[in-house]
Amino acid sequence: MAVRKAAEIVATRKSLVLVTVDCLRADHVGFMGYDRPTTPFLDSLAAGSFIVPSAIVAGAPTYYSFPAILASRYSLALGRDVLGLAPGEPNLASAFKQAGYATAAFGAANPYISSRFGYEQGFDTFRDFLDAPPAPLSDGMPAANGGGGWASRLNRKLQDIRQTLGPLGSVYDELYFQYCQRIASQPPDSLDALRRFPAADIIVDQAQAWAASIGETSFFLWLHLMDPHSPYYPTQKALALMGHAPVTPFRARYLNSSWNRSDLGPKRLGRYRDDVVALYDSGVRWVDAQIERLVGGLRRSGLWDESIFAFTADHGEEFLDHGGRYHPPSRLMEELIHVPLLVRVPGAGKREVSKSPFSMLHLAPTLLEAADVAVPSAFEGRSQWRQLLHGDSPEEVAISECVAGCTNPFSPANRLGARVLSVRERRFKLVVHFEPFAEFLYDLEADPDERVPLSAAAEKPVRRRLLERAHAHLRRSISERDPRTRLQARLRELRLEWGKPADKAVSLAS
Image 1 (tube, rainbow, N blue to C red):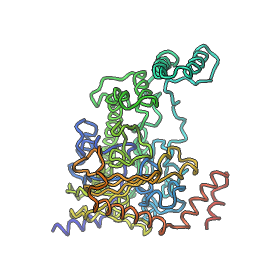
Image 2: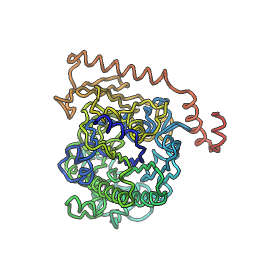
Image 3: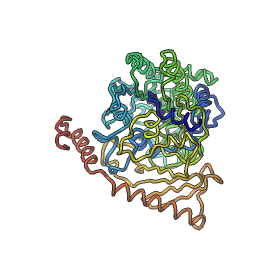
Image 4: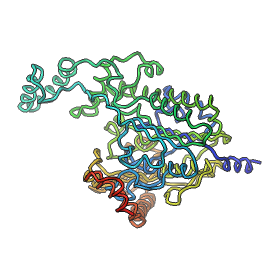
């Protein structure tokens, strides 16, 4: 009976709602064990969903993560100089579109998952909100050489003085920072005026309007939400939902500016950490509230009962866990690569899922099989749907990679630095830096926070096994590279650099 029920679940064609959240680390989500009320609605869904305890992204940040999520491909498989999805590359949206689904994507103005990098492919409707003018990025720091007023003249004089202070420079830095925040800059009007990205309610409004327009057609809907992303400016309603008192715009800007200071070390930054995390958590809470609103609309329209719902993130965020902030491509620690993954499938109910690593490379084929849609043969990952259904999960490894220091990937020249690679098993994790070469082996059972790597003499068989997996991954990444797909991606890059029309670039690649 159980086998027949599982087969019926697999064979039923379903729609898919995929929600990805930028910068959402796994341990700040309620159904992953967080003790603050960031996700009460998602926690309620968890009671009837698959919860994957060890979902690991294939790269971080966004531009090294999403090729795996949407196209089941490692981000560096086409070469370090290729970013995004290649023209014509099979992906989750194109698979659904080919199967006759209506497809739409609504993203909160993240430039790395825009049409510039091929993410519009396969979508009937693609709205990335990059056409809307962003809020001015104000950190309360006046331009050093701009303007001619008294504040600008004083600013230039202070900058000149700074060069002569020597060891007293840190005192100057603090005084200058306070001057900029409290005297030289205009107080902001509201948190909304400071926010860099559309809030989740705006994205959900668009998604609901689209869903109402397609009738009873099966659909694939992707939402990417940016509310937890820095700078951290949640809505006042989100702060209230978290039980926090209202935060003035000045205070929010002061915290963000303080957290962003390059002249402070981890110890001095630590004084702001709790307040910054409170802003971050409130952004997560707003995401949860808007997902509740989205699901409510699907329920009222009768679409929810035939829809798979998947919730995850592209990467996490660091809050001084290892002395750093944000999510630069330099280290692949757990706070950056371990993300939440909830998959709710009508009729499947709650299932126990193995704690073995689940690479996000497998997400797209898994969702396609759950929806009874053909999986493109070009996908590198394998569907884990039947393993999830039956509770079978062999010991897997999850590989993550990025190019160290590539914080501005718009120029191909910035993408050619040294690779950082991690190989994660259930217990052990190896992180390899290629320039200068260094390797760090962690025992995640004894040291879940990755504080102290094991000595070179410890766990030699484990180290060798993981190094062999890393070597096999690199060898396969080069030997199995699709030259035509790479050529198409490079031609798109050249077209953008030279300003050539898209149709000419495509004809050259044909």
